[in-house]
Length: 460
Ligand code: ARG
Image (cartoon, rainbow, N blue to C red; front, side):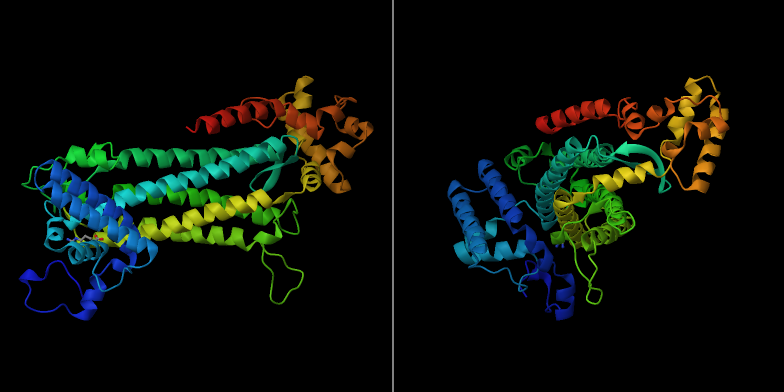
């Protein structure tokens, strides 16, 4: 047991208590951030004359040595230390002697851990954003390829109106684009440096908090020392944003699972992203999509868990807050993993164009267009709706599509129909006539694709 605070204690910590309290098994993850933060802190202390230039150099040399030894594997981060902060400080003192004991001047583990977590999360937000951008790049490529791949659009999982695959995928493009915007917002709001807040009430040393913030790439220092050490809002925001990413991935997974089913066969998930059955030789299961859907629950759980942890905590720091780390780390790993896998699955998936088009043809997805045809020939919409309802009933009885009816059959139900009805309800017409902004028509879709490509190029 290696602790930083033995002075006022007369007894050793009980081993079970030590284990229960320790966080090194998970906060070892931000050793690099802890060292980076300490280097900035010491640089500021020397600028303020609190440490000498020589002391600063010695401490920074020691810290850099620890960093490279951890990285090359010659120094192990072990559970002998309570947390990563103790590990770094104890190793520093071992390496450079008493000067190492000056590192923690004007600092508490409360502002230190708040800083480490923010540094770590900033990098992770950028990594998440990169994965979301990779997803958008695949989507835009597929959208460009499939502006004429017709498929049924659904409501209530019932065939509704014909759309294109580009249009359907474009909906996910918008979702993941908003996810990126959320990441950017969170980054901007959290990017203030808590270091210098001390335990909760600042310090009596003349720290230059603006300088430390600048050294670490923050927009500035946080403005209330109590809030600095007790704020976990940005983690809740990130968990919420990741929950939304997962919700999007889960909906998309659900569609892939349905589309990949024997009944639909709209897509074929690549062998590399499928698994087999131990008993049924014919099976090729979309396990990755199912797992992504399943893992969504973990990320939602982390969000609920942290909200619940935080709700009763009085100001300022309380040890409950240590619980933030495992939750957030697991949620980040899960979300990043799911994004990367889903993107790979999408990039390698085969789209069965014929099957999609046939499905759109055989589900009365052009019924609205048949009604619009009547409206264009002077029939009031409500009457047109009724007439097409009769047509649909007739077709269901005969097991045919609207396109298969003869003109005589049409005229028997309404004399308004003429030869041009076939043109009016063809799949191509149904889609291509829909050209308002955001609609599936090719011209409208190409305009949106051009805008989205500008967005990706500008990397907004
Ligand atoms: N391991 C602690 C955490 O994750 C670090 C802060 C410790 N501060 C304290 N007063 N015990 O929150």
